[in-house]
Length: 330
Image (cartoon, rainbow, N blue to C red; front, side, top):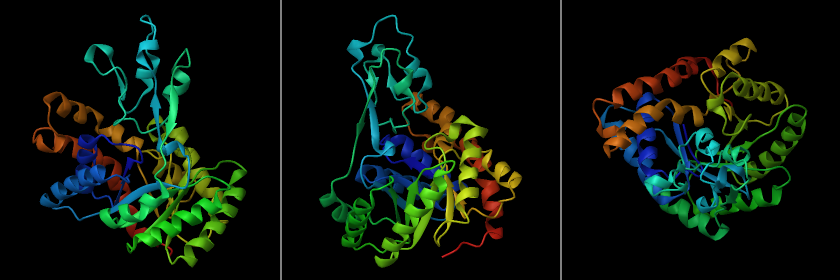
């Protein structure tokens, strides 16, 4: 379950982590931020109290500027009064505030960088601001947070930057179960993507890290429907015969349609796993909002969280049921 590399909405992170841990996910991916990790662990502790098995904690890092590590920003004073605020309508994180609430502009804690508001503004007033964790901060942060795994969001051609991040992971001294590599591609670019992954595979092996290849079919778009799910499956289909050793995990565009698309493509057991981000949040949004209106966390609302848990289980259960069919490559 992907909380979001830039998501710092601590109340929502805690609720999402708790409910999806109870639903049975094997790993929770979160921002490399002490407050966010504390919220994840509070959620996991709540899930443990209700009988859950503890999932891995994975931290998201990047090897340079990346869409997953950005925030939208605009000056609300420049917005014309007559604007119908299409930015607000397209924001899946409900991160565009209203002037009358005293929270005009982008609510930075909620924004996870999907970018849908950027083209929506008719006056082009919205900009993106990237956030990259400084190299010197990585070892100490890992030592403090003690994650089980790390995800590195990468871009084509940044091999030296990737190697430097691996050195920083080594310096942290944390025994990581996996280092996930997330890159996106489509169409004929799968051949180029495979070449990039092989280069990173060599570096990972040299650093004694076990890889997980997270295939970002359509980044941060899982709540948009069947088309994005098809993109994620197509990338798996194209990359599978070309990829280096290591499990292949679907991400970016994944949703309730993904398993259906896998079955249609004859790839039911080809993916070692699946990562849900936007779809996971979207499913629980009604209950998150209801708890927010009460001024409390969802996990503390005994009349709400069981319904939210059922919605989470509807997404997760079909994948748990196929786990016994999949042999994960090492």
